[in-house]
Image (tube, rainbow, N blue to C red; front, side):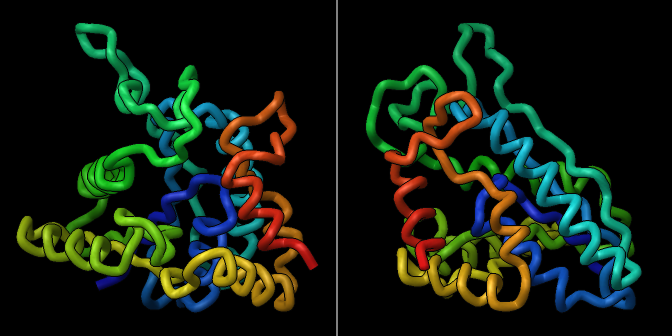
Amino acid sequence: MKKLLIPLLSGGIDSTLAALKVIRTATRRDVSRVAPVFIDYGQESREQEWQAVLKVSERLKREANGKGINFEAPVKINLTGSSRDGVRVFEWSQSMLIKGSRSELAEVENRNMVLISVVASYAKAFTPQNEKAVVITGFRNEFYDTRIEFARQLNRIFRVLEMQIQIDTPVIEYEGDGGKKKLVDIFSSMGYADLINLTWSCYTPHGNQPCGKCPACQKRNKAIRK
């Protein structure tokens, strides 16, 4: 059974390099196509992230096409529609990632559970019976909803539901700030510094410029610093 690769791209370093890692080892015999997905859930930097996804996708497409694998245009899934009472998905969160929030917290409660569920539903809707959907994530073994056990339990749930869907975590072993730097160094040394430079990490941008102060900016600066 061939695999349909669905990179869940945020525009950031982790999800981009996770997708690259899988595409580099993919073969035309095993993979039918690559169909990246981006989710707009109301994050403050959603426009900058989407532009980064479009840019990195062009670079990833070259990698896939070089192997004879079709790379489809990225799809944006919008979760910002309002319910009857006017509340949007995640709008209740006190995270700094959510547009309009004044909190300094980076965590969005239960975010990855929701995002993976949405992508799984999307994948189920358009994956042929003779293909298996593999959702590629940039999870690294750090937070409660990016850890190895979280991904393992998600895959167990998909098996219980008898869905031809699998969560792949190709960069999960790169833990912490040191792991992120190692990940960046490895791919930079392989000639992918240009791809890394196309990514976006800032949570609270000033226009099209990163703030340089939020947790994501700090982690990025540590990772790419020589």
